[in-house]
Image (cartoon, rainbow, N blue to C red; front, top):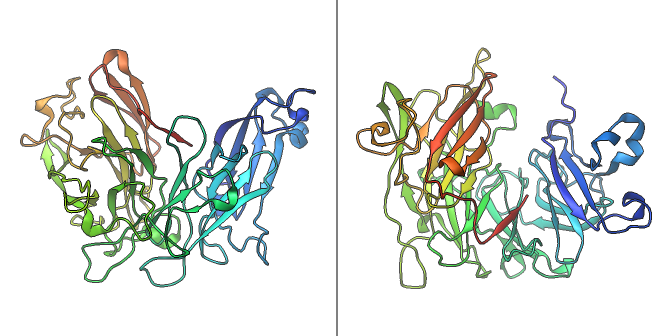
Amino acid sequence: HRYYVDGSPGVGDAYGAFGSARCGGSATNCWRTVLTGALAGGGAGIYALDVTDPADFSETNAAKLVLWEFLDSSTAAANADLGSGYGEIAIARMKNGQWAAIFGNGYNSANENAVLYIVSIADGSLIKKIVLNPYGTSTGNSNGLSAPAVVDTNGDYIADYIYAGDLRGNMWKIDVTNSNPNSWDSAYKSGSTPKPLFAAVDGTSATTVAQAITDRPEVGGHPDGNGGYVVYFGTGRYVADGDKTPTASPINSFYGIWDKNTNSGSTPVLRSDLLAQSISQVTASSQTVRTVSNNAIDWKISAGTGTHLGWVLNLRTDQTDSLGEMSVSNPVLLGGTLPRLIFTTLIPENSACSFGGSSWLMEISPRNGGNLNRDVFDITGDGVANSSDRASGTTVSGISPGIGIMPEPVILRDSGNGRDFKILTGSKGDVKSQKNFLPATSGGRQSWRQLK
């Protein structure tokens, strides 16, 4: 197999970033639609195309369509920090007035650092390169930054903070609230050394083992209105050949980490600060489903009060071929009357005759990582989700559709009928729809905006 342009492209709009040549002559301020992508296994590089007018998309118009290709040349050797990028690239307006493409450096770079790039959407010129200290507990030098989540906290459609994880389990927070790019840097530091918001480690091992973060985090306001933001992400890696072989260590997890936005001088959250939830697999309506514990969270609002700065849900390890269960697809946070956190897991299979593995679709409470207080899965198939769909009286939190490995679902909201649909695709080539029945007033995110 030969890898080419294998990264999933993303599309975003930018206003006033281009000159008159792209704005119809004399106009210099106009909206343009930009497609960006990485090469993934095909190599180290980022590209951008102007796809504003689909009618112009042809080989003869290549000079007009191609905006730029980015290859890191700010070090002595080109591509020394740029690796194979697997996540989508964010497009956002920055505090200095420029529109930018924002991306992690990816994996298998020459320097093996975790690096955030912010480049001009107009011409691909480097605005800011932030080299994050290869801080972590794993052995070796392998590291790389995954896809970032760009967050606008005040509704002005300008980036304020950027969150991204790396292969050593660090969840970084980058502060871009200053209008001077020279001030953009890790929000948390010890002296001049960048420190992560949180370092994900396998808390069940006798020795501490880092949990790789390869998905893009989801970010929301504190569920109880206590200020700051909660960062949701899973751990695991499924990008190299050896990743398909189940291993006993580390045991991967899914996290909800409270960023109090204090920008203190040390790593703000430790695993010992987290409430632990657990997954059980049981039989209900002649099928295997998952339930999740619902331990109460006691938020540590101030010094001397409360216990928890978030929660952790360990993935399963006690079934055949499940030692390598991981969460490597982007989670989805839904707000409204019934806030829900939705994510898929991946259980690899080391068999040439299989479809790579299987997945679970999970829906839990973003507040404490526990089960929801309302039924959302219709496991009996009678068209409604109610008490008959529970497992021994407990709300079902996860199902396995049996279609192989699933990425994040496509969610279609039908608020008029009080329900939503999930379109699920799997590595077996099947497409399934999953109905969820919710209150008609259920809505999306509120009081904050994530720029993707």
